[in-house]
Length: 41
Image (tube, rainbow, N blue to C red; front, side, top):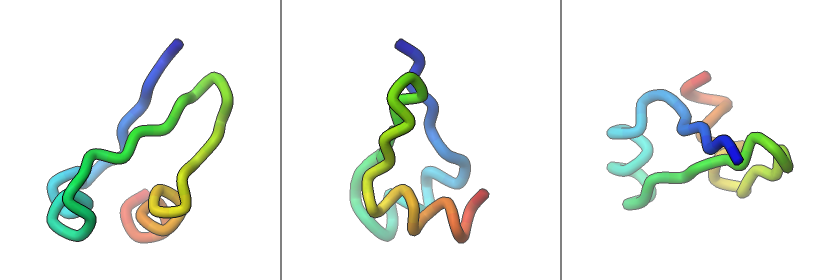
């Protein structure tokens, strides 16, 4: 089970207060991750 974290985690933490992780095997993304990926990926 591989967990991948997005880049610019410090900025995400500053905005949301948490590390948001994505499970690579299921490809399920929380809403916040989708938002963050727009800006950071």
